[in-house]
Image 1 (cartoon, rainbow, N blue to C red):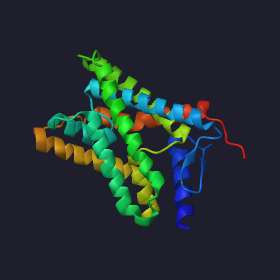
Image 2 (cartoon, rainbow, N blue to C red):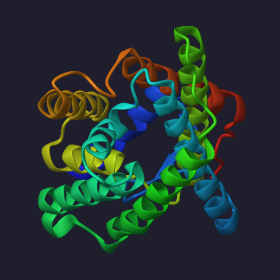
Image 3 (tube, rainbow, N blue to C red):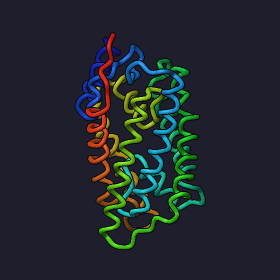
Image 4 (cartoon, helix red, strand yellow):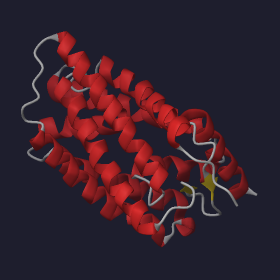
Length: 243
């Protein structure tokens, strides 16, 4: 019963917030992007991860605030001698440990796939930051343009990741674990999770620097614009799954 409620909440959230009403929800709560060759799905997923990392890099280069999920790793990378990608991996492992604590016996070996995915994603982030060395907007207008481009790219990457149905990144997977354990509503839980990590990032920024770093208007814009891009793409490109 609890699993059925979880699947219903996930399906409703995906339909309302990303427009993926055509996706199937399997018995283990994984979102399926229709019938697709496995190799093709992996190629799309890896490509989506890289595009996602480029979007994050563009948003950071805009210097108007990064996405909520990247805010804590970014603040830590400014304070300590580790890269954004390395802190992204460490933060992801922390989120996976939280899933293990929450799910206990319901934690399956499939959840461990998040670890290699997170390592690849962290590597892609560092590669993207190096590739975007030439992006250095000076005026506010150019920063806004850079931020908007980053959000659009990020939305494309997220769409590809979900559509491929290979694995979930730890942030979304932790939300799913919370929903499964305490029967909360998926959309509300995701929103509270994003707010919580943003607040933590703000506190870390104030503690380390005495001011806000990495959390600005762009963080709020990213939270809405990325979802809009995913919904737009899903409506234009997604094909209904037929049984």
